[in-house]
Amino acid sequence: MFDFTSPESWQAIYYFGLIAGLLLLGNTLRRKIPFLKKSLLPTAVIAGFLGLLLKELVLTQFVSEDDILALNRYFSMITYHAIALGFIALGLKVSEKARFQLKRGQSLFSGLLIVSTYLVQGIVGLSVTLFLSYTFLPDLFRSSGILFPLGFGQGPGQALNIGTVYENTYGFTGGASFGLAIASFGFLWAAVFGVFYLNYLAKKGLITRKDQVNDTFNSPQLNSAPDELPLAESIDKFTVQVIIVLFVYFFTYGVIRGVTTWLDGGALGAFGSDTIAPLLWGFNFIFGMLFALLLKKIFLVLRKNKVMTRQYPNNFLLNRISGFTFDIMIVASIVAIRAADLLEYWWLLLSLGLLVGISTALYMTFMASRIYPEYKNEATLGMFGMLTGTASTGVILIREIDPEFKTPAATDLVVGSSTAIIFGFPIILIVGLAPISDASTWLVLGIIVALFSVFAGVLLFFNPKVKL
View: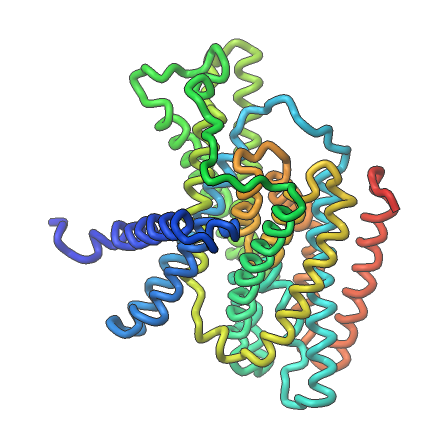
């Protein structure tokens, strides 16, 4: 018999209740404290760092280390799933008349930009650790700098996986923690520089500060098409949006699970089970959005052939779903940071993190204005947030200046990530080559420099809208 009084039956309510309380408190602080109000710091970021401080300074005094680890794992899980759910909601939105005419090959350029930024991070990180290992820090693990594009650019999952391989196979003591620490530092970069850039835009007059934000939504938007599902129906209109999103995610899980089961059966050997399978799970949000786009196309075909007479997706409500999941996601991702991961390697993280972060900011600012001239500010914030944290941090920064996703900046993150898989896959492979020997480490550095030269050249000289 199910025990309704057991802690396990209330676990989800407990964790989501914590996030809800943090968001309420963060929103209150943002509205009441002048500094926070003027800083343009997103409420979710305030709530996330507030939760991180409470966890590290207060909660650790009253609960066991196992409970803290359980909280971190649960919040990481929330972050992982919320990314996919938010992007599926965006992918299901009905196409509207575009405000900007995007050039052909937009996904190609976005993918090249993402991967070339990985390469910038790898070049800076690996160059510095190689230099330090031959001069001031001979005991430093020479290939450790190559973890920066994984932690900054791809998030905690990949950094943890490769860091663990370095630790178990090549003797990098604390490699897993180092990978997580890099990812944690990346979240800080996304938040701090993101806020700095938002304030820069405000001072330039590109963002209007208002004490009260007008609600741009009104009731007609709940029925943006004459043949939409009406509000007064046997099933609630919002429920329909939720079940479509959940169905797409369930289908995504089934496909990924089926492919990984096939790979685990030895279809491609250890390469398939150890390399490809983790990538499939790590890019769940990309596959989720691709299946959402496919379902949207199926809906369109059915409506053209009069098989389906109503339009079920509603942009207003789908925006609300994505906004909710992204807010939850950013709080959970920040609270899941372990302060110990930041403190253990503070000397290397601080120096390298600053160099890699500044390099990423300069490169992204330069390239985004040339690749996305019509919405360069949204693109800069979104790409920088994603390439120092995760897609969720990129989206949360975009929302601060484009709350209704009227520009394609949020979509560029996912569409670009899909092509980035193709260009970036060889990079993930050579990361495993770096620690084999000193010669292989230098070889990897040479390869990523050569790849960066090619990708950056394509972005600059084959982009039809570039003005040099």
